[in-house]
Length: 248
Length: 316
Ligand SMILES: Cc1cc2nc3c(=O)[nH]c(=O)nc-3n(C[C@H](O)[C@H](O)[C@H](O)COP(=O)(O)OP(=O)(O)OC[C@H]3O[C@@H](n4cnc5c(N)ncnc54)[C@H](O)[C@@H]3O)c2cc1C
Image 1 (cartoon, rainbow over the protein chains, first blue to last red):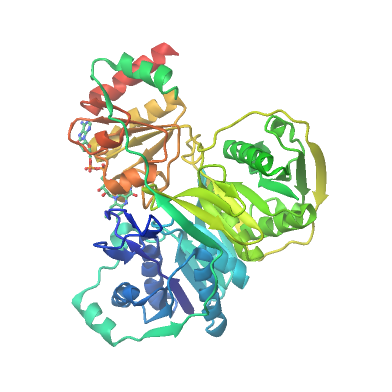
Image 2 (cartoon, each protein chain N blue to C red):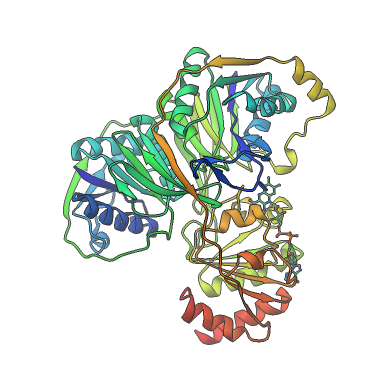
């Protein structure tokens, strides 16, 4: 079984968010990049499936050479191979189209993407890919089992969990729950050494035009100071919520 | 050409977030001089939608669409996009709508922008304001494809009543299939879900252990709120994962968010910052949450919460 894990290279969760060039671009200066947390749950699951399903795991990122450190980390975690499609990630559409082109050349039974990235939060790439490739699609996936060509999975939905099955090929939007936080694989020395020997292929891009463009960024307005209420004056809190904020 | 709004329902009841999407659609259609058409699936009684300004409501009737399926629903919507010659589709930000929207954009080879918070800045070029970097910033984003799909952040536009007498049409669609099928749905016992809630009551590690959640649940019940928690609380298994909110958990965009025994780490705040009003209860006056909150009480949650419940109950 061939598994593709699509990795988004995102700013660390504690990064300061600033913009440059007249607020048209994200300021990467001093920002540390990590594997998108939702993708990391999916990658760990895929690595487990190397044993349970004799799977081959490829980690793929669309991006310039700066994303290679993140791909090496994926190899250290246990992916067999990494691919970088060589172009900046302009928008979800162009990224999905680039991945689609790769998936037409190399066949995958299962594609795992994070349910959404923590930078642009679109949640688009997995659905776009499924639509473009005409694969089945499940997002917010918290459980996945594959036997031969059949997948059984659970999705977190509003107010519950939905359990479904389908035939492969399938695109999965992964999140916490697919594996637990404590199950995430932290690369050890051996993994890091082995990662250096594993292939990291750079593939030329198709040069797809994006369909969305960020014109200008801005930051939320500074908040006004918190209004403190004394612990023995809770009637005042209720009054403020009722008559000032009008939320209860 | 009309602006299409997909209206989600559960057991023939429409979702509040879909009413908001319809109101947004009405305002958008007005600004560009178009009509707005709401689309429901297997809902014959659409009277409740009449207050929100639709010119037309299409009910897609299909035995193939009894269970939600992003693929089948997307293909059904494509039929309506064609018959209505629509160029804009509006969705809510519910989990199912976002799931559907992403799939639909792939099937139709078009652009989709989620987390939109305002009416478009301009309609030609089509530019919308959306949140990004998990609520730490906004982006003015241009959509350039012919068909444009957007989803609206809950509570960002609000509900604006505009009674109208929409034309009703029923469309029968047959022959949409997929080999993906639902085996079972496990419903949670809690009545209010985080995505639909007006008020969310959230507990953190400051509550010391799962046995102390009774007061959180009781406060939530008193307010008709959903319950949520910080990440370590779900990691330790004190509460289910489905309650984990924040940058790596569920987003919260409620009208009121009450944080109890939560320090206000950047990853937590990122996910809940879209909430309109934030209240923090914490015994450490230096807790970062006080910088992000609108109202705060410094003190012991184990005293404050029971007292607050008592006072709220007395008021009702
Ligand atoms: C990659 C990454 C992603 C993350 N994503 C998320 C996320 O999505 N969501 C999330 O929540 N966190 C997330 N975190 C974790 C985050 O950094 C914090 O560790 C976490 O939010 C802290 O949870 P807490 O506030 O419940 O606990 P603590 O930080 O331990 O805070 C407990 C608070 O309770 C207060 N307290 C103690 N006793 C009482 C009392 N008797 N009465 C009142 N108050 C009391 C304390 O003063 C303290 O402020 C993430 C971290 C990383 C690294």
